[in-house]
Image 1 (cartoon, rainbow, N blue to C red):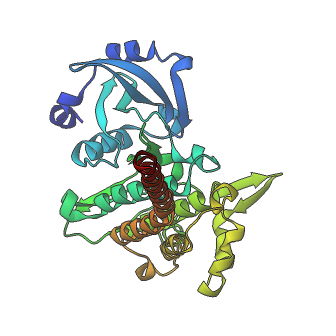
Image 2 (tube, rainbow, N blue to C red):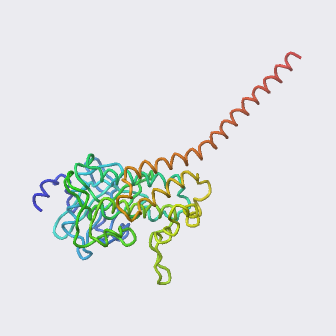
Image 3 (cartoon, rainbow, N blue to C red):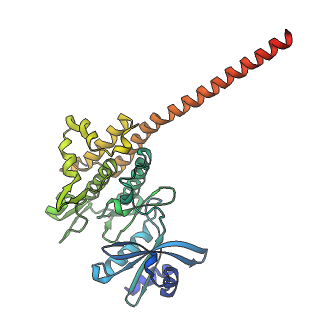
Length: 343
C-alpha cells in the first residue's frame, strides 16, 4: 500500500490532528454507528481555517479492512460530483484508519422518511439529487470508468444544510475500465437486506441494474415514509413485497393506500404517476426492463415540474388577485378624491 500513500499523500492527516478534532474520539462526539465502526463530528484545523467534518473510524473487527479503506480513498478522490460526498482526507497510522469527509448536518435520508415536515417537493428534490450522483457514477463518459456503488440505501444518502443529497459509503464499490461491460461476477454478495437486487443474490452477477434496483427501493421508501424492512413482534415485513401487490399497471392507482399520509394532500396526480411508474421500472425482474439512471433523473425532474406547476399557480393566482384588487382600490380611491375636488 506504500504506492497508494504516495499517490494520495496530499490527503493524509496526522492522527494527532484527528484526536484533537474529536477530543480523542470522545463518545459525545459520536454521531453514528455502522458495519464499519463509528462516525464522529469534529472541528479540524485546516489550511483554510477551522472546519466542521465527519470522521469515520474503521474498526477491524467489524469486517472492513485495508481494501475497503483504500477503495473509498481512491473512489472519492477520483470521482467528484455535487451529489457525492467529498473526501477531505484520511489517516492511516498504526492500527488507526480514519476517513475524513465534508460534514452533512442533516445526516441521512432514512431518518426523515416518516417526517411530516419533509414535503413531497423536497422529497422529489432529494431523490433527483441522489439519482444524479448515481447517474454520474454509471456514466463512463464522466468518470472514465464503469463504477457500481453496490450499497445504495437511504442511510447512505446524506443531506447537507440545504437538503442537497450526497451519496456516501463507497467502500463496497466495484469499478473497471470504461470499455468493460457493467457486469462483475462476485464470489459472495454484499449489500443490505431489502435493498439487494434478487438477481444479484441468486447469480452473483453484479450489474449497473443492481444499483438501479436498490434505488427503486429507496424511491418507495420516500413515497411510503418507511424503511424497506420492518420487524414487528418478531415478524419481518417487506415494503417491496407490499408495493408489488399493486403491480401490474391496472392496480397502480390503488397504491395511495401505502403513501405516507402527511404528503398525500396536494400531490399532483401526474407527478405521482411519473414517480410511481419509474420506481416500479427500477424493480423489474428482467434487467433489460430497468431504466438507465439518466432516465430516472429525467423522469423525476418531470415529476417535480408537475408538482411545482400544481403549487405555483395557486400562489401566483393569489398574488395576481391581490395586485388586481390593489389596482382596483387605488383607482376607486383616486376617483373618489377627484370627484370630491371637482364637486
